[in-house]
Length: 244
Ligand code: PGA
Image (cartoon, rainbow, N blue to C red):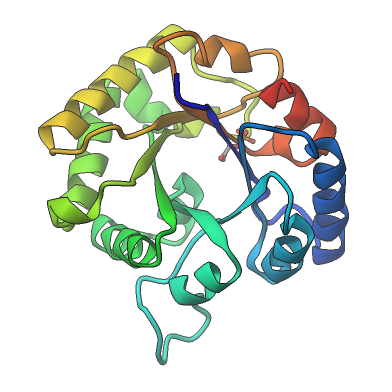
């Protein structure tokens, strides 16, 4: 059985000083960890966290990446530079970026391409909002999001894509998705990936994951990992999810 993947998404919740302190707590807490634990700090803290994580079992992730390699792109962060800090994963198309920053499929596909070119694993986030859920349109929405991004990607380039199913109504609300329902969506995603020629695409669940519900998503044939926001801001609570 392959190892589960646990990703901590710190969003913009911590100041750089708090992020560095929390990163040190993580290193102490995860010093003998044998699994895959990834921390995505904000960009200002990334270099500092990279230094703290050096020679530890913790991996560095980023919350976003530029759709361009290098050049006159004010405010952007290049995959080249993320790679130089040993960034291993990057979140692409988190619902907060899709909704607040109007990120679209074409842009997300370009970001995936940039990440892959630097051997950074892209984690494409998909999920329905509350209204779409009410209409029972989960599968249609996810299909559109996945197809939307994949249409812009040549097949050969997307071998190491990961997908995070994050129902938007579950993010930061304390209302996680019913695990059985989430697993039905996972099967839909698997089917779509197969049809798109993607093999072995790890599928993660995210949305109000806590130590109380994490195990329900990780049952045999369940999700391949978890993307955690609020409960990842403290080493101890993330550790309880990862269950050392
Ligand atoms: P949450 O956030 O765990 O606080 O719901 C998850 C996410 O947005 O990735």
